[in-house]
Image (cartoon, rainbow over the protein chains, first blue to last red):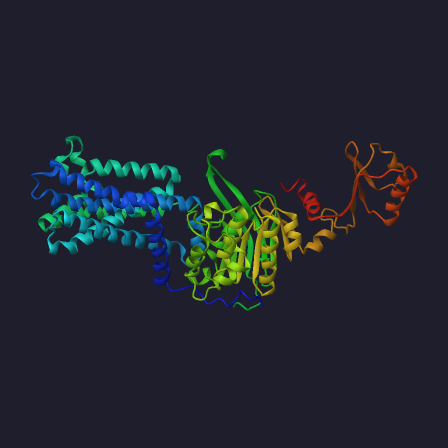
Length: 254
Length: 321
């Protein structure tokens, strides 16, 4: 009898497997320097930029009050869409997705682990951005937090589905280019940090239908007005369902 | 019902189409066409064939990574297409390209995979056994091919599987790693694990396999133990005791005149010769005596029995590579 081998005792429990994968992916994301720049450094630079310039003046709150909800939305897009998209694209290239799907984790557990990692990183981003914004004078309504967190989770779901859709259908180099480019385009012109009324008139009509515009507007309404705009929630739900269904239909594992 | 002695894997009439492919005017390509095989516990079963014969596709259908077009597969008594975590925990898979994340370090990666199982192997013992501790501080992307292979083998084994799939296990291995990996495979086989591997290297199959399926054009053409395959001419059904004598000697085919009729003499290039047939000790004596009379010393001299490579050549009419 081999000294190494012992009897097979089955898989770890499903929650344990998902937590294991989520923890591993979280650590991998936090160790990746480029990912950290995208997740923390660039959103904080945008926050400071919006606080020291008059771009958001006259929108019904102090600069930092108007800017911070949008920065939180930007964080969700960084981690869920660009970060997880790129990571998944390269995992697919290197066969990591195929290998892990042969372990007890399986495909479902793998996706669940990725979503968990996105939520954990997003929580850390919210804490860091919230604290820094607090030093800059941000005074969010306390009662807005439950709705704000719910919206961030929904936004993360929509952007994760979109990120996985891109990662699962094109080459990882293309995923890298597409998700980074869209992050810049949506970040600047997608209504996520700059509300649509301050954008060029050419894009004003469409940004509310984009996941970026819907999430940015919903978070601003929640934190500034204490109201959740249902059209924006509906648009985010629609993006989540459509992108999720498309990812399930077209995602290629190898 | 599954008994402890039932096969770990039974494939019957496997068919796999891929596509539609633009290169075939939008038609499907049949990569596996009616392949059947059985793998038992405590045995190494090898699928031997050239690149593109359908070996990896067969393995991936058995692992549930690809959906089959037709045929049946029983993996530990279950259908791999509907496998749950329970079945997956009993199956170890080493993919051809490894499937290891480039930024990971070996030991945290193994601990991570081990976390998917209730009773994983002792990582320290596994790491020591495969010599992974020599490179445990190096990222996967900086590992050599042989180091990656050993790590991928460890990752496939960490859950104490009952069946282990190895796709080209000796690819990229240096001789020392190869010995280490082959020793471990033999040990696991002796401990009762069912091992299914693919290879295009005859030497792998001859050294490791208890039972060999030769795969060509998407289906199995011949099967048997290594010694069975070596003894039989599968085209004629007759036992074969052919050997080939290779040597380098001064150019000229005069020596052929003293040999028995029925032995095939060929000159592969000027000064390099081979004699194939049912060579007897007397045939060797005749040749060496002829050399001794003329004071000829061959530069090299090598006698080889029939190899699996020859068997494959007979069957498919072409080389393995």
